[in-house]
Image (cartoon, rainbow, N blue to C red):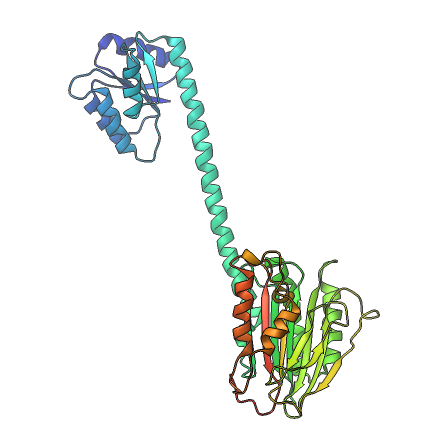
Length: 391
């Protein structure tokens, strides 16, 4: 170690210097506190042995100034003094010292105290290195997180949806949404809408939904039926997802000219078709297992069909179980529930074609769920009538 020995007494310097050199340390001597401060500014030592009573600048003031010079860098400072009162020791510690050595200096005690300071220095260096590694790891993870978010947003294509008949409201429980909404029209003009709810939460759930979008958009572009679409989706997810992973989904096809609605529901809460007066025209309950659970031979692509052409402003409501099972805060023990959702939707009349039931009801669901969501929540309102002009 490089040791700065600060003492104005020649005898003390000779004795302590000899001890230090016998221990294998390099020694620099300063005759008073002012010289010591200048020496630290010029070349930071590994250890300072500081006398208390010196001319020009005493050890306490020199120690305070050295601490200011070093800033966050830590160099151990051990006081050397014949003053043994408790107040003397306390003053040395308060001025920035780390330990106290009573004169005349014992070689054995000096060696032990230096060894203790070396252990502390090694520990501090280890902690600093670990802190740097943690900071670097956090920085890498933050960058990877941002990249993942960007890729996720581009692949799920939610920002590309521009369908005036739809209102999509979503509140993820984490940075990555395990709910997915896909919307597209077939070449023949039929509107296809998918609401998916991947098992779990966060990044794992978000990644599980990614294979859904490619299949949905490519099959819709080929003018496929809802039946063929869900068969393809199930086959794809059953092939690529890990065992035990799945995506609950409801997929609907709407002919907005003649009011025909086709729906397949696998593992989602029942979709609701409600007219302008708030009457429920049709439920579309789950009749199949979620996508990806079983292979093609066991999969059930059963479709429910409803003719809404006679209804006034029929609207279809798709929602993930995070909506119907929402609870939190003062409502921790009570789920929002499907029937309460139905009632809330039914109490809002849509005499104006631009009315948005979903927005009003979603606010009620969020209030019920509280600030900390236990699941991703998504509610989609689809206007099915041919008289709709847009929200």
